[in-house]
Amino acid sequence: MNKKTFISILLLLFLSILAGCEEETESSDSNGITTTIKGGRTGGAWAVFTEGIAESVRRENDSSYITVEPGSIVENPPMVGLGRVPYGLSYAMTAYAAYRGVEPYDQAFENIRAVSVVIPANYYQFFVRKDVPYDSLHDIVENQIPIRLAVNQKGSDAELITRETFHHFGITYENIISWGGSVDYLSGSKAFEMMADGRIDAAGNAESAPSGNIIEASTTIDLKMVSLDKETIETVSEKLGMEPNTIPAGTYDFQKEDIDTVSTPAILIVHKDVSDEEVYAVTKSIYNNLNYLQTVHDEFKELTEESMINVGELPLHPGAEKFYKDIGILAKDE
Image 1 (spheres, rainbow, N blue to C red):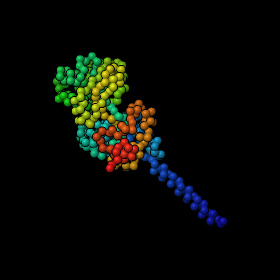
Image 2 (cartoon, helix red, strand yellow):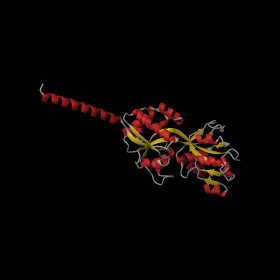
Image 3 (cartoon, rainbow, N blue to C red):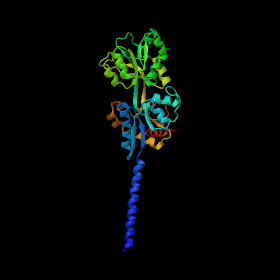
Image 4 (tube, one colour):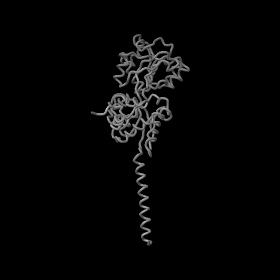
């Protein structure tokens, strides 16, 4: 073998090895997903939920790079709808409000689609000091009780639900103030602080049950939870895209009876232009990692194969819809 032939063989071997490496790299990259999910505030439960979803995708798709960014329930839908981030977490009722362009939004974000339920139920919880002389919203309205009410931040889910609940009785915040009561836009921790000081009588919130905030508050404040009546539940559910639900007796130490209320799931949302293949893979990743997610946070323990599709009125992304049809959760087209 002459020198020229030997060099040619070496060159061919080198090119063959290089091509193999490129093929392997492309194969790995084809399985990877690079994207961003907007979740909740840093250190909060929603940040944990979001990281759990991100890790599920990483586990199922080699070479994936999933970034988790802080966000909020109200902020995330327009960010997704405008295409500034591909994915986000929000309440189903909030995402649907953004999709329609109703309060707290002043424009419609019609590019939002649903992928999966993340946390099946976040409950509206109207709680009061145990020593107040009423046990229902009907009592408050009928007797025009000068209630000192905390309604969470203006435009938040909890505030919208509280406002809509009183609207069902034909009552506005101005009516409550005219009775000698007060309405303060206070979040959970501040509301509990003022309730402990006797400056607030009642507060409404929308969160998981049991709520760590309420458990902590109940160690220093005697509380009781107030049920919503059937008509109010039906009205609020229809108006805000929520569902009737029940907080079982014993969820809190101070709660001796079932509490009738409304709830909304936390869901993963996506921009409609994200590819069907990618959303299919993300949905499959959540489905295949339900056992793992249950180790991430207790809230995930209620998430089941069947509950993944209960995303409310928001349309499913075609990629997610195809996955649910493939595994038989949704019926295939005739």
